Length: 138
Length: 100
Image (cartoon, rainbow over all chains, first blue to last red; front, side, top):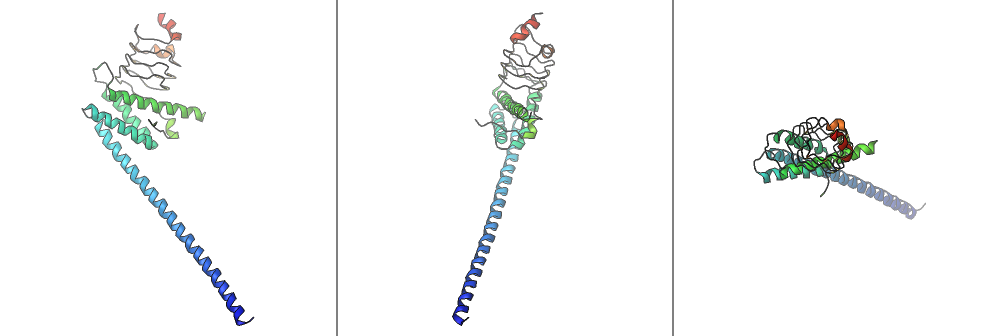
């Protein structure tokens, strides 16, 4: 084989090696980007969760407020939390049920306030879902 | 309005438990009250039209003036533990029991 042929072989190998290196680099960068995206998504999820926890705590405190509008706002906030975060549903419904059972016992009104009516609606929605879920498991 | 979500494992655990609540005039129409605990709750003038009372605990529940028209899975055994009067609107199948 003459020098020209050798140089062509060397050039071809260099192209193959260069291409392989480029592919490896691209793969590595893609992997790093994918990990970064996953980490960002997880961080965003944790931030949303922290926010939901904060909303939950604040809304529970506001349930006992004397003003109807504050209580209503708290109840709708709790509802919004459990629309987006199913794992809050049981604690939220337990809080609402405890509120209904404990805080209404001393009431003297003969009609249901709008705040209590909304709580009943939320409980019925949860109960309906629970029943549907139990039926689908059978 | 978007519906709330329950985790699959929570669906088996969830029951309405409001013993002793004072909720006159509440609307439970077509509600699912399976295994619910409404014991000693004041549900006078409440509406339970078409509600499902399967295994619901109605011990001491005040149902004066309540509307139970079309209630499902409601037995006389459950109703006899509740407090009803002539203003309570009973499902057709239980009216006879009440008359006796």
